[in-house]
Image 1 (cartoon, rainbow, N blue to C red):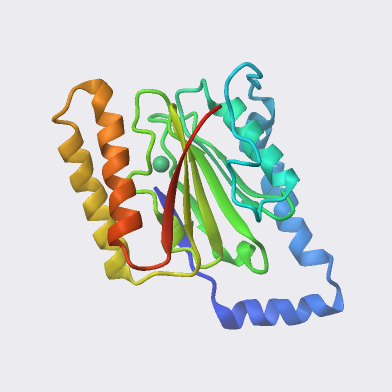
Image 2: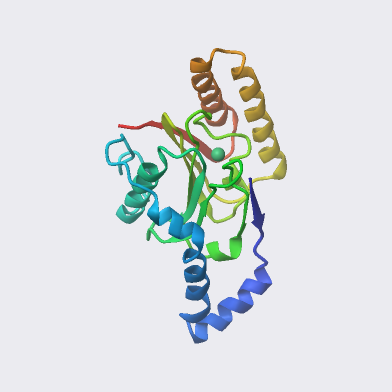
Length: 226
Ligand SMILES: [Zn+2]
């Protein structure tokens, strides 16, 4: 689960004004510092599996630049065989990585904090993997796109399928809660079925619910690897 630090408008206004004097300093430095850390190095060194079916530009939203498509394809190829979660936040128009998390820790789950300050003025998308043995579709804990103002796409690399959640802006707390509860409900419903059917039943219920029942601007798409 991610915790999200909200951007304080007045604070960022001050910083933005200061940046007009020297556009390059303050912004560039934090990114470099964060990406040079151990997790990014680990991510760079993950093996790339060129033999597996992956994701191409036809599978992704039109707004995605070629550099971002390449980033997504590589992410899938790097994470397809690992038993823990990795996560990137990136700019889907430039391909720039904003955050990189590699959770090769105790339970392999993402437990990190992000600061929305670094998303200002960017076209933000996130991607994370659901390792083999876990459900492919977004879990109730996902849908963080609904709480992050500048995130437009939340991508999930499941073991069998690829998922795209599309939503712009921030949503009411009640809506987010309701979606999370429903996802939890679909999950408990699906585990009554045999192992192979579980994944499909959960994913289909979620697809139907998000695209037909939720009236707000949230879209969920399932993509097959090919
Ligand atoms: Zn997830």
